[in-house]
Image (cartoon, rainbow, N blue to C red; front, side, top):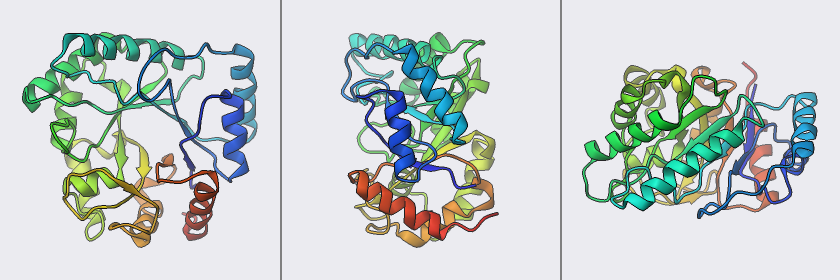
Length: 278
């Protein structure tokens, strides 16, 4: 089944997001847990959550992919920034339990010239502090393009983090098509090879969600600039190969392309028309 949606605003609550998703033929979506640039989160309306859960169950929604704010950096060289990341993630994971069994995606962080190994240790340390045995949320490490001092530019770096986390059964990976292509994984000419490499290093069972984005930049550019589907260097045919790949079935796919709602509706329609039922 093709489970596909896009990023939606959480400003009007959970039920509004679900109804908006349904209006563009989406059966999943992503949302920021709070302002993407950081700050306090809105109070949760428990009645809104109840109606949302009923609506998504009734309409067969797939798993949702919440997104941590961009300012969350667990491996910053500033102690106060690391403290913000710890407190924010801990609070977000508590709030996620209002909507059980969903995904919480975050950018691993930037080590700020401290070195990748130091960054990896700090990220794992934070995860060891916030993950609990009774939580129902799966936390997703996002694949990164490798700009600046980003951690997560390779499958090996993500695997290092996973290996250092005690409750790593609570972890998965969000595979961003723009990021992996910009990082140097050639999903255009060798999608099978990239997925085999992911499986060998991390394990394909940990690939829980896909951010589907074309790229404004050429292969291995380490730039991370998203483009509309079919209008960038990755191309529409690769996206079709991804949605129809036997190893990637039923995984929630989130569009993060530079679009308004009507643009997302168009992309969802294109991809649904290109999907071959497995």
